[in-house]
Structures are given as structure tokens and as C-alpha cells.
Image (cartoon, rainbow, N blue to C red; front, side):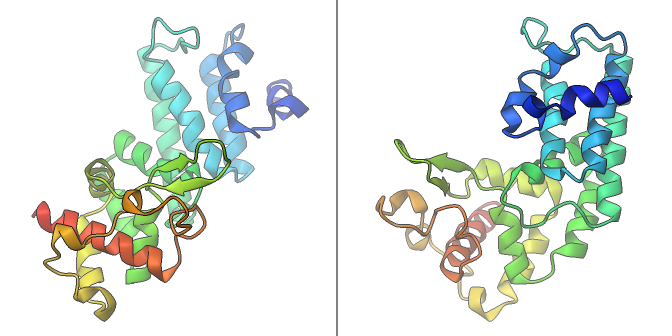
Length: 241
């Protein structure tokens, strides 16, 4: 245990940038005879260190590369070992939910925990959790916004949020009943007027001039940003019901 922790506590493997470690996990463990234990230990280590944003990235590496037989990064676990790993990952996610530690308005990768919570479990628990923690229109819009894509402007380090599309909307619906989110929004006088919104009145970041700073990551909690997301969400909801 102590020896293995040294592997990923060394200066070059501090999980920052995350990609450095993620690309090297399988190389680090290539000669290990206890890979399942090692992968679980790595999860536990990050859980206890409260590195919540790294947990879904670590889970993804095992989830994705255990299936890629022809990849140089292939993770060689048996079906039983993989099932045990997923069970343990679900236990960690469940523990986080009990302590209200799964984010409902993050700007990092921690929101991807919802995808594995549902994939390894079901929608029931994530739905209950979200309904417990998201109860106002502001919380609804901030919850939705954390799942929006990010794009980096060519030649700069500026990241911008992309629009709420059908794919992201469907993902959110797999985590929580979207009618719950819709009802909260239209119960707020600020957004009630958006009911029966027409597509030509929906604002999209992609239609705004490049100089517009509204879509830059960090502006998600501004009133202007929230209004745009409210329009996009309400339009998608009404088109799908």
C-alpha cells in the first residue's frame, strides 16, 4: 500500500495536469500482479484526499480502456475484476452523495460522476439526490450549466461554454427527471414568460460575435448567462414533451 502510494505521490504524478497521470496509469501498473487492488487503491487514495474532480477521470480510464483490446493503454482486467471495480466505484459515488459532496454547480470534471453513478447503478438515486439539492430556479440553471461543453478559442487559452444541445439535454434527463427542473423554472416569474418559446427567440452563444465575453467559463452564474440557458432548456423540454 505505502509503496504503491509512493508511485502516484511522486512529484511527476501529482494528478496535475490530470492528463499526465491518466496517460501513465497503465504504464505504472504494467508489471503489477495485483492490478485490481492497485486501481481500487488509487480511487480510494483520491477519495480520501478529496480530489473529487479526478475520480470520474480515473473511473473513465478503467471503464474505457478495459474494453479497448487493441489499445497500447489497454487495461487487462477480467470480467469479474472489472465488475468488482465498478461496484467499488459506485460505493464511493454513493458515499459522496450521502455527504452531499457530488457537485451541483461545478466548473470542473467532477460533474461526470453523474454519468458513472447512473451507468453503474440507476437513475433512482441520482434523481433523489438532485431533487434534494436543486430546488430553486438559480440552482436549476447552474446545475444544467455545469454539463455544457467547453471550447478553447484558437490561438488563446480562453475557454468558452457551448450551447445546450440535444445530447447534453438527454444526458441530464438520464440523471434527473427534467420535468422537475422545468416546473421549477416556470414557477419563477423571471422565466415563466419563456413558456411556449419559439426557436427564433432562443439565444445561442454560437451566434454571438467572438468578442462577446458572456460564454467565457466563469460567467455561468451571471443573470445574462442563466437567461440564455433557461431559454435553451425550456425550448428543448417543450419540443420533447
